[in-house]
Length: 444
Image 1 (cartoon, rainbow, N blue to C red):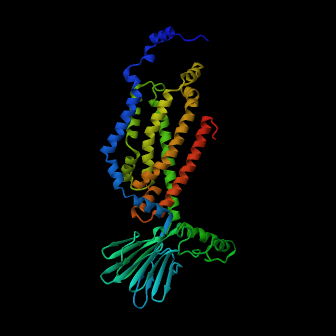
Image 2: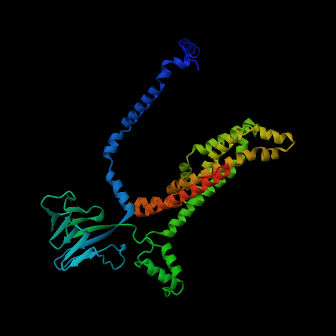
Image 3: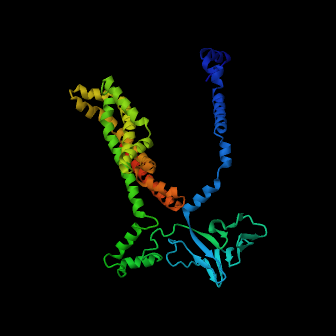
């Protein structure tokens, strides 16, 4: 192979000046683009005051919410007195009607609340002693407020007449004149299977299984298996029946909305496609109709139909139907406009009718794409149905929003989020498998 001489290089530079001597702007284009991106990022940081927002964010709330997703707290109120302390629980306590937890120890006039091996409260009618990790805080119970003795450790705070003692994840206690309000936290979801009114509540898995298989009927009118299912389905704390019914509504909402949109957009796409319907007026009217439907967000359509039909799945189905008709119609019509006309011309050349030309010359090319797009939208709408449901369109989205608004039922929120994720994962797998089958690809 001969060496490249200087004359050869000079000849190349003369013939291809744009390659060897590009303009200034082209040589520095990557640097200019990078500088523009950096400048834009700094501008956004300044314009939206992102630094101030991050510095002023209440990040501790994220920790509290995450903790509430995976745990539950039992409220206890201790009222000390000279003749003895009384311990009370909320009316619908997770401990049932006759609570006697092992972490509450009564000894004469004293009550001890245990938060762990080195964390506890000792309460009597005159003072409260809080112990955590080798540190001790004594709080006197005076008539005019709680009086901490000595400097407060980092895990205690004083606000007016109240001392709050934190024991980390295990809970906290508010020491108030005449009472101590304790919040004792435990990992897990309390009474997830049976609530406290169920005859199966508090029994081990083996005991419940034995009652269902061979035990004497608890209620003569139904078997123990039916009673157990009834108690789970109508669990007052977790409302499994209502949650699963609302989840099914969301699934049906997404399916019906997508199916109806696919059925309507299919014939309209043939009118909108210029190569299928050579009529400019019909093309433009149909395409502008698609633009109108998809220009309004699904959430706005949901609000509109909720106002028109009232809260419920019908509003959600209508919102998905309207939005997806516009989007699928546009996708379908563009797919038709990009087909291979040779196949259609071949069918037409043998004297086939216009209907058969579409049936044998067009549909085999576009039907797998149409079905694949419809499946993708069905999968996506399963997620969207949850959002529009929260706006009043029904389904599990509305129930999720109701649980979040109370700001106390975050474990119920976690339960519904897990169900939604499971459904999305399942539908994603089904949709991917069907799309791969339609496109002739093997899914790995």
